Length: 224
Figure 1: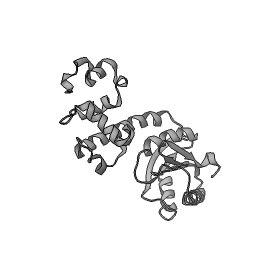
Figure 2: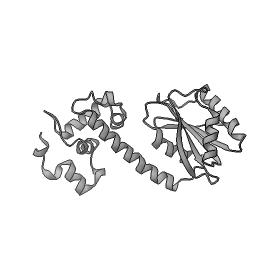
Figure 3: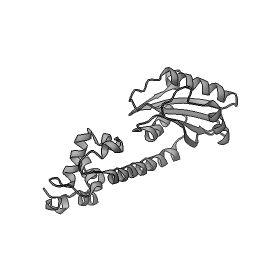
Figure 4: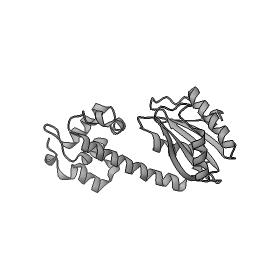
């Protein structure tokens, strides 16, 4: 059915204006983003097809550009637009988390890091630089790519901590595989950084691994 053939008040745009975005299905929300369908499919049907092909809305929004562009009805321009929407959403959520959070508990850190790292297809190693009240001064991705003990340089981490006048650090990295268990390399990196920062009287509060919707805390595991 052509979208224009649907009664006006039942179309996604009008339903959102009258009932709010939460009243719409995933396909209807995505249809508003897509704006138009393709031959044989209106925008809602195309949206549902994309969700079905990828497995879920989350999977669709996390696929790399090369895979996204293989779906019928979308291309690089839509991929760029979708990534921009996701980044705006991420920054919107982070504003509230940063404004309200004191990162003194693994749960507060976990909530923040899931927004930052969930869905990444490559591994990154980042640090949260905290003041003496456990408030975030800055976060920074320090290293990208496959993380191992040889690729993380304690001297660079210490330099960054001193530059931001941090009282404590929390380390984090993601496991794109979806498995949150720490490797031996993860343990070695943590111990090496903890020793280096102790020399300049800076504490390491935790090291967290984000894997999908899971987040493992070294502190809670007794690994620090």
